[in-house]
Length: 246
Image (cartoon, rainbow, N blue to C red):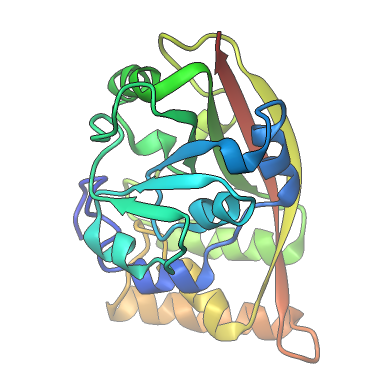
């Protein structure tokens, strides 16, 4: 399994597309608030992955540059007429100076060289411009989510990321103090997608005895809590930080 942030999801792209949660409408509302008509805006979705956030913004009318260096992840995304995929990194997006109104990093900022990325974001943002950092945090007060994360943590490799950034992200010039918004998102999954949700995590084994054991326990957990139509719900607390350049 690759440890490089730009390639470590290469063998997880299909599972990522199938089973990762989206983001609540309230979080998108907050990142666009005060920016004017979405149809007049351009955004860079940096670390776009399979394009979950890119499509949410594009569905609002925003023109989106989806910056993603991982080819399998980039190719796994569903095409959208207002989304332009770009093979580039957070630290070198290849975008023109001051060409976007919004830079968004959804479930991605913790993978970047943050001082270099912030300098690049400042270069490509118009004035005024906005940086939005978004994370879905598990709400482990529910038995499904608590059980899921207990199983995944037990199976995880030593380099599982700790998303402390979601609590108070550290940004660098030209950004200063941020504003945080919290929303909630419920993610409904059948048994196969519940298993794929775990396999999409880069720090979880995807084969071998460890994976086989984890899959058995995940399916048992799903069966224990599933509704009659074979669905469970994982609850997330979505934390959005916005930083404006004046």
